[in-house]
Length: 265
Ligand SMILES: Nc1ncnc2c1ncn2[C@@H]1O[C@H](COP(=O)(O)OP(=O)(O)OP(=O)(O)O)[C@@H](O)[C@H]1O
Image (cartoon, rainbow, N blue to C red; front, side):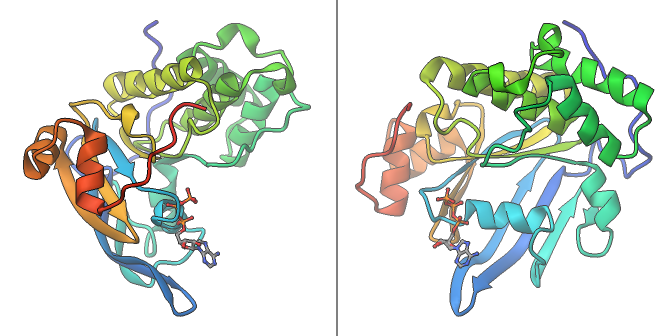
């Protein structure tokens, strides 16, 4: 499959060199509870970055700040060089998101769900139809467009959500625990689709998870623990720095946690 979305991206900074995402010195509190403390990270174009953290580490809060669900009052967040606070529409135009909770309308078809989303982005009906077709092709569901979403498996639902997040050709994709609750085969299918997109579309991806076995040796890793970034770098560096032989052991060493991690559902 050699699908490339038909329409050019909106005029932007030189996205081949500008980082897809820069988070710089971001903190966030709920009341007097600080849940993110001076968080900094970068996602380069074409990089698959694993944001590793246990439940409650602050991953979803960070995503809420990047997507502008919450206002970041401390620090800077830039998407493709656009500050999300000062240039929100330019920044968010380049962002695709797959949220932790399921957000498709199960009584609509796959295509209807995607076209509804495209309409929100201001695409004409004709353009929305074409983008929906291409997006479903990207995730291997080109022949299922006329089926109702309720007929899909959990893994297929996630793939439709990924297709939807790709419809406007973002440069940065955020996925918040996208494989939680999926069986092992579905998990592998979903992560492979996103890895293929990274390679083919040169997307920057920030993939939040607490499932350590999703990390490949070539990934960039950020360990977020209790709102603090404890490590940022490549897997070989993570292993050598901790003197361990697996990401799971390294995570335990860095965070001082002993609890076993959830594996495939
Ligand atoms: N709206 C809120 N009000 C108060 N506290 C919150 C709110 N949202 C999150 N928190 C707290 O902030 C901390 C970080 O939560 P967050 O959901 O960002 O973590 P997470 O790493 O995404 O974990 P999970 O996958 O379980 O959601 C937790 O202690 C959580 O209880």
